[in-house]
Each structure stands twice: as structure tokens, then as C-alpha cells.
Image (tube, rainbow, N blue to C red; front, side, top):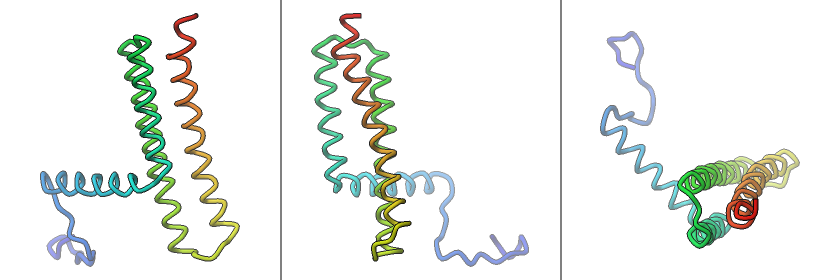
Length: 133
């Protein structure tokens, strides 16, 4: 805020506006993507997605099936990013082993697991079962 609005801006971070804000947000997102690539689980999920796309091509999946699979995969990427953020925050705030920290990490992991199952079930349906039903 500005002095003219009656408040003084004490934020240590200068907020950008307009196109500069959009560019900054894109840089932050790319930084997050680079960080996520450092996670073995995420790299495995990327490989699995590539294999699924090959399976979709081989079985002649339709456009809707590609779109649905892509949306499920994007959700899985988002959950994996949130899980990684939870793990990093817990490790920073509570480096010692605690029940609360373990529970937070386990819950994040379970959220990722649920989406992995959803992706797997849908991919199996498209590649295997949709051609027999």
C-alpha cells in the first residue's frame, strides 16, 4: 500500500503489476517445474505418461481420451508439486521426526497415490478395455 492510501507498504517483496507480474509468475512456475524434475517420483510419472501416450497412439484413442488423460496427468503433476512443497516445509520447520510431520507427509503422499491410481485406471481402460466393451 502507499502512504496516499493511509498505509505504509512494509512488504519486503516488491509486487509487480500487469505484464511484469505475468512474467514473474511464469518464472516462478518454471522454477517449480525445474524443482519437481529433481524428484524421482515425478520423473517416473513423466515416463509413465509417455508410455501411456504411446499406448494411446497404438490403440487409436480418440481426442476426448487424450484430453481426459492429459487433464488427469496435469492434476497428478499439481498434486506432486504440492506434496513436494509439504515435504520441504515440514523438513524446514520440523527437521526432527514427529508424528505431525510424518502425518503431513503421509497425507500428501496419499493424495498423490490416489491420482496415480486414477491415471492408471483410466489409461488401462482406454488402452485395454475400451476396445472390448
